[in-house]
Structure formats: structure tokens, C-alpha cells
Image (cartoon, rainbow, N blue to C red):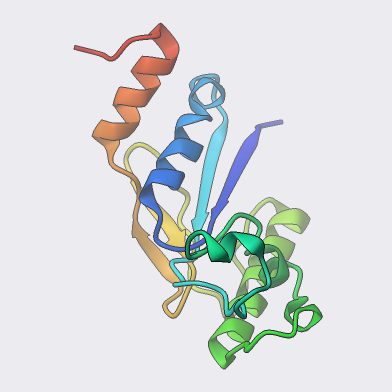
Length: 155
């Protein structure tokens, strides 16, 4: 059985995506398949004062913000959800359900999800537009693979 690693990111946060991908270097070197999912959405519609962190800095697309989308539970939070949020949730649920059932996220009426590999450096983006987009920088990933495997950057 082949190991698949799924990384789900919210928003346009390339540093977070890079760190998540970097953390999988050893598993990928051992042959694990990497599946990166990014939604590309700006931010969920969190009302002011819901989280104390909002007083310190804007939340952006925060950790676990994707959960209500993936499980179709937007209405458990009394936020100003849009038609785009509801569509996004439906598509995310379909991909996750297909992947859990068959190991392949693709299905009827969904944009084709192309696996990411060294020759095909793309990831699935979720947001106003749902579809494939360029993946993280190969040079940056190579740097971090080298750093984590040897403890120092490659020359």
C-alpha cells in the first residue's frame, strides 16, 4: 500500500505551504505521494470579536478554518456565508469523499485534480476559482529537503 500525505491549506500563504511541504521531506524520500490542497480564498467571514487573537492581528485564513467547509457545517457558525462559500464547501466535500472512497479525489462535475509530482508541479486551488495552479518553488523545496536531510543547506 502506498502512503499518501494530504496537506490542506487555506488562503494565499506560501510560507505556511512551504513549511508543510518541507515537513514531509523524509516521507516523500521514502516514496510517499504528496497531495497538496490550497483553497486560495481570502478569509472566512469571521465576525469581529469571535476569537481573542483578532484583537492582536487579522486572522486571515487561519488554522482549522477549512473544517466547516470540508464537513459541510458552515451553518454551525453564525457567520455571513456567501454562495461562493457554500459552493466551495460542496466541492471540498465531494473531493474528500471521493478520495476516502477510492483514493482518487476526481469525480463527476468536478475540475480534474492532477496529481502533483516532480515533473508536474501543480496543486489544486480552492476559492472563487477552483482548479489547478502552480505549486511551491522547486528550488525552495530542494533547499529544505537538503537542509532537513543533512542539517545544512546545499551548496
